[in-house]
Image (cartoon, rainbow, N blue to C red; front, side, top):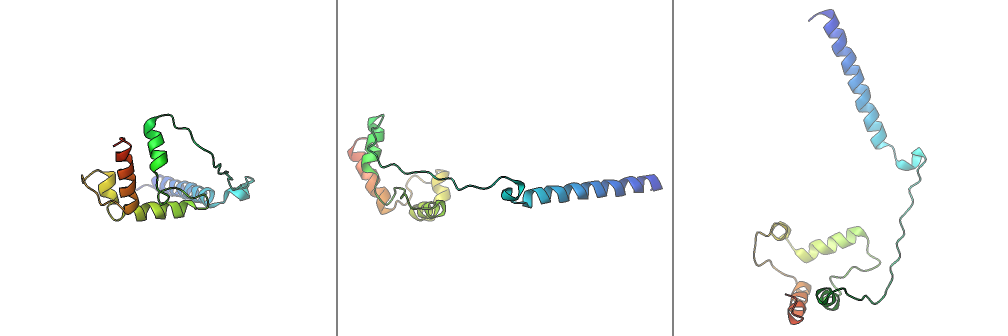
Length: 121
């Protein structure tokens, strides 16, 4: 290789290394240090009677067991853990509809029976 080619390759390596370091520095710096303070998002939970738009939605509201409902003091992690615990070990089979009869938990069985009684399923 000629001397010019070696110089250009070295310059390109320095530029790409600097670009990589800059990207890592930007991604690694917290948002609060750049002048944008992180504020917790506060959402209020309003307990009100909901009027359903359809009979099907009203049946779901009436039939939803307390075990499947979201509690106001749960964190997102607790909600995810609860959903995974309810689904058991067959999450992929449920999502991809690989099985016609997934194993239902007791709460899901209650929900299905109530929805069938209301004529939704």
